[in-house]
Length: 452
Image (cartoon, rainbow, N blue to C red; front, side, top):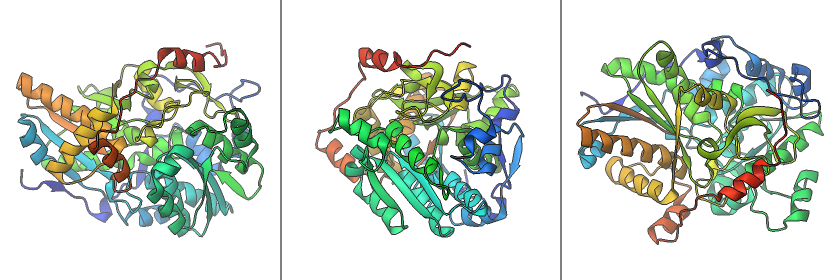
């Protein structure tokens, strides 16, 4: 290979997002109104989202044009490089070829601005100047704050309390870009007050933070809600990752046999996997692995059912793999992988057998991150380390079988704001945690009964 890093020019930033819904053999089950359980209409969603994003959410068009103002901001860091992990290959003594898509190059340090920028743009052109949202590890909150700074918009972030304290520098990034950040659950909203009345020491969860952010949006005419994962329009915006990957593999005459990405809500997995799934749907043999933590095993141990996207049942019901909207995960350091549900599109792909899930403990993921940092030089976010663990396991399997397979994983973010987590790992203070089955069953017992 002539080059370790495969680049595209700014002119090759995709001009349209790819919508997997156009090519799936089965339509996505519709979101349902939380009160009536009838399919939601665009009018039902307008108090929460911009009209353009609602249209994208429901669209089955294969290609949706990327507005030029969005592409201009993308050009600050896109196209991102595809990198051949030669040093990691040597360390593993594997015949496999390992590549990673490096999404850590964005100013906030993750893939999240790929959707934050268009979400801010569409709201701005519709006259909205205030956005509310939730964030777990802070990558999404920082990305929306970054995007809002370009459009002179106010950004309100409810950050899961355990991550608010574990990751203070992501909070600082949000403040630098002008956002207002509150640890969730809080006393600012009725949803937060309800949670704190029952559990004053609640560590928070993304479902709770969503409840607070949605409540703020529906109470103000000048405010809309945004989110960094789960919904179809977010998956759509992230497709720029996989579309660039296709062009980059063409340049080097290679193509992945297996694709690994971490999953919390599903956005970075969808971003790299969905454009490549077109090839599997056309008959090519490609394995797609969604890598999640054992402590929040949404796909591995959840159920594929209709559930609320938030804790206090304000959001539409979504057909997805879920651990139950009442699920409160432990305070693991991969804070972005602690959501109770999985993106409906990702969930549908798993139910159709197009992708598979694999769960990992946090210590083995940090060990994979340390090996990656020592060979490739990049300290990954704890979330990304799950994808690295999956890719390393596959490379070791190839070493044992002698197969010269091509392995691709998504490095969805850097870990420069996660060094407290690495300090705990290096001092042997991290513990593995598998969520007890009885607690999962308790949370699932509160799911609504929706007839198929």
